[in-house]
Amino acid sequence: MDERQEELAALNALHMLEGDEQRSLDGACVSDKELRALNTELEQVAVELARLVTPVEPPADMKKRIRAKIRSRGGPGAFGVSRGVIVGAAGWALAAGLAVASVWLWNERSKLIEQHAAAVRAIAAAVPASSPAEERKEARSLEDELKSIRDDYEKKQAALNTEIESLRIRETEAQTRITQLTAEADSLKQQNAQTQMEITILQSTVWEYRRSEMIVVWDRLRRQGVLMLDKMPRVEAGKDYQLWVVDTQKPDPVSAGVVTVDDKGVVKTQFKPVEAVDKAAKFALSVEKKGGVPKKEGPVVFIGP
Image 1 (cartoon, rainbow, N blue to C red):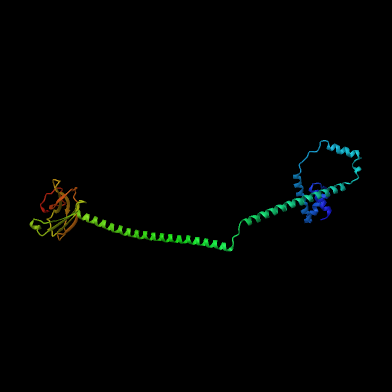
Image 2 (image 1 turned 120 degrees about the vertical axis):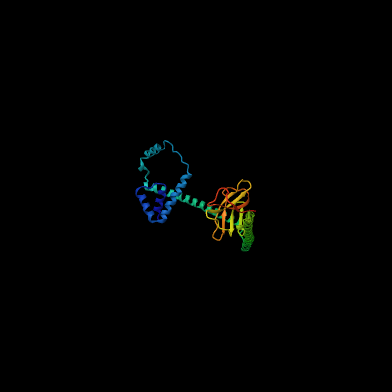
């Protein structure tokens, strides 16, 4: 980078280059890093300076006065100074001004950087640094606090586990007790059912049935029963044994069905009266026509008690 290129960079910052001079500067900036940096810095300084200057409107007759002055001196050639000299002098003046402005901005930036560093140092000095011993002490304090929290948690966990185990034992005991109570309830139901049963043993007053046996088990709740006969004589042809239930609230015995014994005169069968019986006072067995009759007709061989 030479003085000519510095001059072009200063003029470029003020947008005063044209044609070959502009192309020359652009080409040099491509290959010269320092020139490119100077050109950029001068442009930035020019922008900052432009912001600091308050625009002033020139007088309305300024242009006419300048032309009149030129004509009074015999035209542009009367000055005897070439454009290159004028531009060169102006460029150097502007370059010098830009350089001064750049130095001023650089100093201001350096001051700001130094002030920032001083502020950082002041903040660091205001906050006391912990010594290794203090850091170890704080670490031990935190460790002790964590250990205390962990121990407390383990104690609570152990107490909770104990309570859970106690609840499990109580649940097992409750299930055992429920099983016992259920068994007792079933037993009571069975006993209650047995108390509803009436067992009647009948003896016949008829000579032919003196060795025969008749047992009736009557369920008062269900109003049905079981009949057991043993050593019963055979009835003659065209006849059947028929069981009767005597209800004191009914005028006639209620039929409980025909009973057929085997060759040994034995039978065990369930029976249920053909009509509802509120209270079975007695049971009777008679010999009736084959298939039975709705109302007793034949001789009674068992009755009682």
